[in-house]
Length: 321
Image (cartoon, rainbow, N blue to C red; front, side):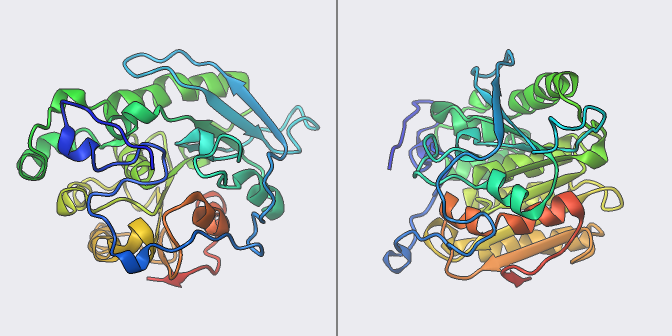
């Protein structure tokens, strides 16, 4: 697995994969190191391809590394010039549609799943930059409120290296306005969703917490909670968006990096419930026994968060927590 180093934050950087697939602080036990598999009967299917119309656009970045943005358009987009569409924003954009650019050769299959589900939405997939992915996706303000936990677990940490706030400003102040200007979108909060996996799950929850007037729903897939023994669970527990106007989706598997997520997710679920969210209505958490920390697994279940976040439908999938 490709790794990178950073002299300013060695303890955490060395522990994290940069691909968008993984960020491990503690290695899983050997008996969880399984072969990846993909469910050929999943809604997204097992065919490696890019389906539908995907456009690449350049949006200048300020305060973060420049990156490509990929936009998937539903099949009806070209046929009805009067129709406007909700928008789903996703991180790790090179892993969303195209197996040729995805880290392990399997993409999320979001294009295939949406087509199979007949959900008509524009998907904006913003690429990561591997060398700074961790810094872009770490919820930056948590480094201030939980500085002691950071210092305890990561000697050499330098707060000034984090770019999570700048990354979100790029999404909200540059990417979203550009998308709304170029495409026929429904730009309001109720029609704007954000979703990601692993560290991308953390930055998705950070996004909806920091910008509750911009994002109405967030999907956190295989969220990497173990950082500093769950310090981010404690951080988010006091900063969740209003349950009257927002929806949250969480899930986790049981193999590879997901092996020790359950206890942390249980803590997060308790905080979500305490904040006023109602299970199976505006919030759901799913456990996928036997699934691992990979695009293959996320592909096999991506229809579940898509239905919940985009249509408010709580369909079957995994074990409801």
